[in-house]
Image (cartoon, rainbow, N blue to C red; front, side, top):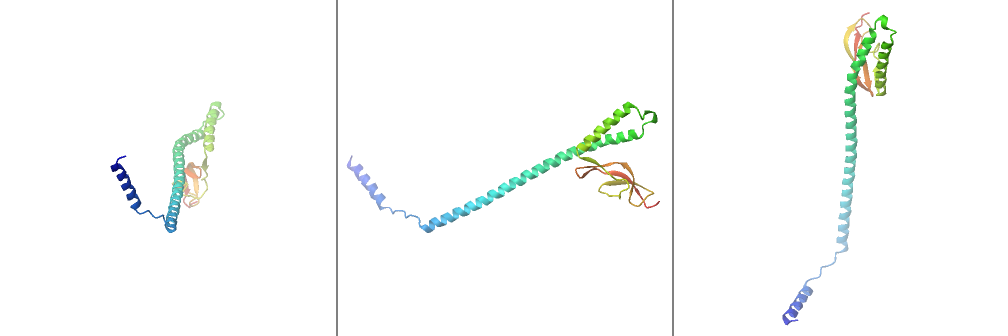
Length: 179
């Protein structure tokens, strides 16, 4: 090696030795850092718990919204089909005497029964209204007539419930209190 190179190496070594040595961290500083780390862990744990709770609530809410949408769509379809059942009722109320034992009429009545059974399987139930006190939650009063006050004296169109909710209000005639 050349004298220049040797002197440069010696100079570098002297500079290294002349720099102050970093002091090791004190126990107090380590303890503070540990406490800060514990607080950060606790804060992050709480944030994670909140995020998981929010996610669970979101899932519940979306499932409920999905269920409500399906029920709404089904109720709209069922309301449409109720008109067909009403028409069966009207037709059967006016069967001519000479056709009352007819097998073809019996077949049509069986089709109507299948439709009613399908409704029952879907949770649709007819609301009793006749001779009940009028209740705007279940009845639409269209007419009044002689009879006990505020009592349904005639059902003009049947009302139906679906899963504890009104699918269609009953259209009724209500007594006016005169006899």
